[in-house]
Amino acid sequence: MRTFLAASMFAALLAAPAYADFNLDSRYSDEDGDLVADIPSNEDELVDPDTLIFTYTPVEDPAVYEDVWEGFMDHMSEVTGKEVEFFPVQSNASQLEAMRAGRLHIAGFNTGSNPIAVACAGFRPFAMMAAEDGSFGYEMEIIVPADSEVQEIEDLRGGEITFTQETSNSGFKAPSAILKSEFDMEAGEDFEAGFSGSHDTSVLGVANGDYDAAAIANSVMARMIDRDVISADQVRTVYQSQTFPTTGYGTVYNLTPELQDKIREAFFSFPWEGSALEEEFEKSGEAQFIEISFKEDWAVIRQIDEANEVSYTCN
Image (tube, rainbow, N blue to C red):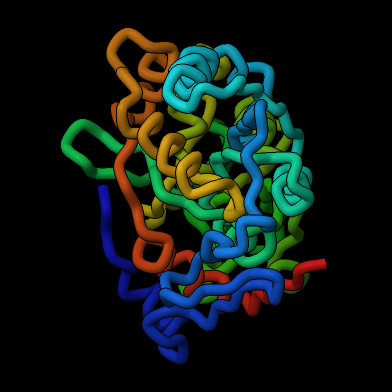
């Protein structure tokens, strides 16, 4: 599933360097140049909590995923010797704030939130879900109701397109860059932009005819179809992007090195077969955790951010 940027996207990024300009907040250091915060060398800055707080990106109703992650958290508890609790979040902003404030230790941040989580919250991503053959990724799709008169992107000119949140790659950043570069369409000028708050709300809105069109992650839609939340014949795809990396998993920077190593071990030793994770995520073709590099695997996302003139302001 891993691909390179399409030629049309390269056209939009001709002025961008191989890796978009990216800087960590001043509270963090990056002596090794891997673009993520270093673990503090001063022991007084390290934390070793009795209870680890874990959360998964709020792409869908958090209540759905607390049970899905229960077995994984039990495994992490055995490996680390710590209690592990699930922290349900309703937005990307609250997830970012929780880690920056020290209330969140382990997380899966969505694709588009990874750069700001790394820059502003001290997030150290190291894992991603992948298929059995090691391939990974999902596509952004712009979908319309099945009975819509819209047949192609140009038919949306003058209409309304619904996005999820501004921190979402497939729900806002990528479609904004693609609409501008490939179709010369910008929000507020060539179409009106709305925001649903989440991918599942966008998918449901299109399926029920409440939204004219929406930009979504097709991995989320696939899981919703598999759970019979919607049926495949309720929506139609008018655009599909190149493949992007999926949710990045990692820790906050200032956990002790020994604890961070044990958390990594828990991810890569988790037995998928027969687990609730397998049951849920096999719907989007995922079957294991693999090691990733923020510097390399998120280069395309940082380039999309630069094309959208995104700046990382850490309050």
